[in-house]
Image 1: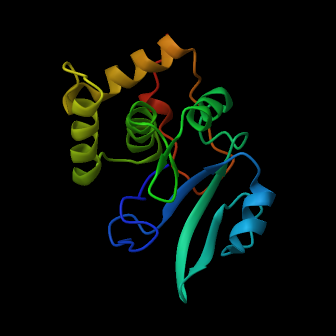
Image 2: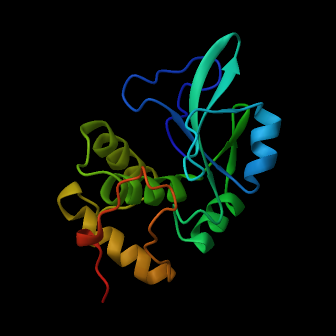
Length: 167
């Protein structure tokens, strides 16, 4: 989903602390990655994987964990692209899912997410996007796609009810 820019050969986790994955089958992903659960709570999806002798923190989001609308999660996986040695969201899905994450799962839009969103907006030809109107842009996208704002099952994830436009 995000924080994969230098993965897997190098990884800089200083700004966000982990790499976020979206998987169709959580149990299979845990098995294939030999991932070790970091926290005992069932709702937590924070794991550690070993890459070349280093412990790398990851989050494993799944299709039905309500992190994103389940239909949207499926769309993200169905439109993914191959990047270096693994799959990532295409630029359009990356832009919108990062926008949602930055505005709904975080209390503040960080500078680096803002910069990434601006670059992605240019990549997908969005001429009217500006960070000052990001929430309006997200609400419009959600409505056009008939996606719902969903409260994640992972109770450690912040969820901004007050930002959601229910009309």
